Amino acid sequence: MKLKGRNKVSPEFSMSSMTDIVFLLLVFFMLTANTPNALDLLLPKAKGKSTNTQNVSVSINKDLAYFLDNKPIQPEDLEQELQQALQGKETPTIILRVEESVAIEKAVTVMDIANQNNFKVILAVRPN
Image (cartoon, rainbow, N blue to C red; front, side, top):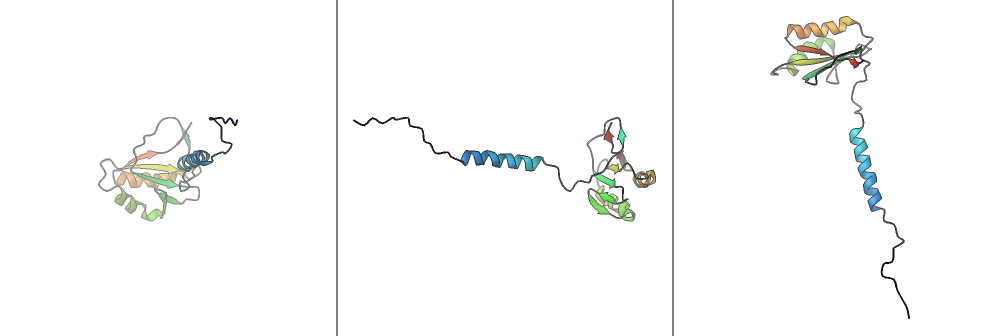
């Protein structure tokens, strides 16, 4: 007489559940990774908090290259581009990101443009 067990475990292994987990981890890490188009600036240190309300960002790196929202721009075109970008905004605000080694006169130039056009300027810094 031949007896056969009903609850026999299959020795085969299904990889579909493992590939689902690996795919989900891959998507998670791709979404949380740093964006490659961000500018790498070494900002000066300071105590205090900054607000997250921002209409436009102006960055100046150590090579004195100007960027308007991560897009390279010539310094002489900055005022016109800022006026276009902030046109129609209720409280036009500029986040000024100037690298630590840049001379203060470059930051003052952007602040002067903002003052002439009644734009609010927030200086971005590293937390202390």
